[in-house]
Structures are given as C-alpha cells and as structure tokens.
Image (cartoon, rainbow, N blue to C red; front, side, top):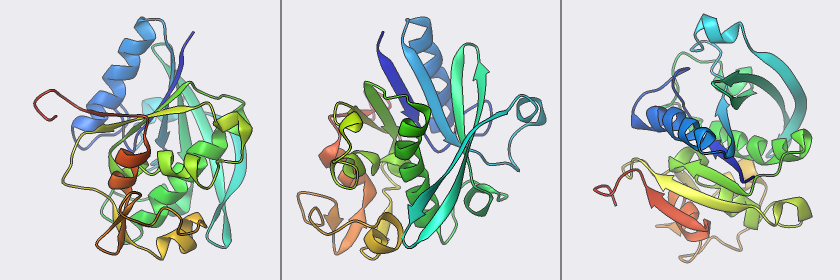
Length: 221
C-alpha cells in the first residue's frame, strides 16, 4: 500500500483561511477512499482548534528540534477523522496565537514546523513513499531532505510533491535564516537552488528540489 504524508499549514475542519484548508481536507479523504495509507500533518493552533476536536486529541510523542542554537519543544498530538490519521505539531511559542499567519517570525515558525515534520518521521517510525507539501509554508522540505537530512538513510527513498495553491506568497526570507533557523550551509544558495535577489525563496527551493510540482487546478497551472 502506498504511504503518503500530506503536509500543510492549515486544514479543514480544524482551521482554514482559504482554498489550501479545503484541499488539505478533501484530497486526503479521497486518497484514503482509494486505498492509500494517507496521513496529514498540521500545526496545532491551540487557540483555533474547535472544542469538539480538541477533546479527541491524544498525545503521541515529545522531542526537540534544533532551531538555530536553541532546542525547541515538539509535541505530537493525534486524532483520526473518517479513517485518516492527523498529526498536529504542538509548540505554544510558535503556534499558540490568535491567527495563523502574518507574524514577524513566520520564517522561524514555519522553519521549525518543516524540520519538526521531517524529524517526526523517525520518532513515529513512519516513512512515507510520498511527502506531499503545499505552498511556501512547507515548500522548503524537499530542500531540507536533500541538504540537512541527506545523510539519514531512512529518508533517502522519500519522494516529494509540491502543490502550489497561491503563487503570490512565496516565503521570502533573508539569507541569515539558513543559520538562525535551519543550521545549513550555502551550497544551494544560488540561482539553481533557492536564492533569488539575494534572499532565500522557499517556494523556489521547493520547485527546484521536489520530485513533482503540481498546481491546485488546471487553470492555475
């Protein structure tokens, strides 16, 4: 059975701001009905989680992820919805806020989220055939798998798919984020990697490093 991990920054029915949240619900449900072992990973926005779902959450694991020179707490909460397992990545500092996006430290927040997703795979002993990332919030995962985590044998067979839902937001950050968040070098900080106009562009990195790039619709393509 094919194993797919669907990674997104939002997902209905828990929280959504637009079409990404709808797709993050509907597509995994359709894949599950087609016989795929599909699981979904989202941030745990504690203040935004509806009470009827919060009551069903179970704590699955705890570990830390290195963000720059600091070890940051990661909690994995789980629940199942119509047969699809959901993993919610908990960190009050990054996700215990009134909104989902638009904060000065979004680079740190979603940089942490992406590394937590990758390192979660070892903790849960779940290695998908396909890691399906969506928009800028998770677009740097294909880069990290080729750079920061390339030495880990269990990750080397994972294929990545990037779906673009909204090209307007690309995840632009200063080059210092490579040090202060990811702790990686500059080997791919070039035009063929993820550099653009002297900055890091997460979506560009995802386009260049993912095994497959798709869009949310034929018209958007």
